[in-house]
Image (cartoon, rainbow, N blue to C red; front, side, top):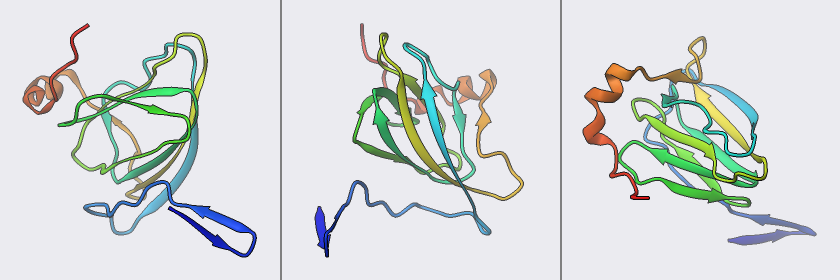
Length: 134
């Protein structure tokens, strides 16, 4: 949706109501740069919701309970954080860098990102969407 205010054009990329916000909340904005073919961060979770925008390239994106999908340059994405495992955020391109910006909302003093161990991944494997066949 585009909206014009004077000479400024505002374009809505994503509108979500997160299921929760930690109280109090800390915000962190980061750029993430993935070299060609990089798998990204191993499965992890965030202490609060994360909102992102793909600047260039393509990212393989997979959250617990959802099938993997490709986020392309110019697209926005989000994840609820909390108990939801973020399985993939890797570069889908083998010949170019991919870059995105994220705004993470989390609990002050807690890590914004926590790696999930193999034991927990095994315990929750039934929550992962079916894997695509090659």
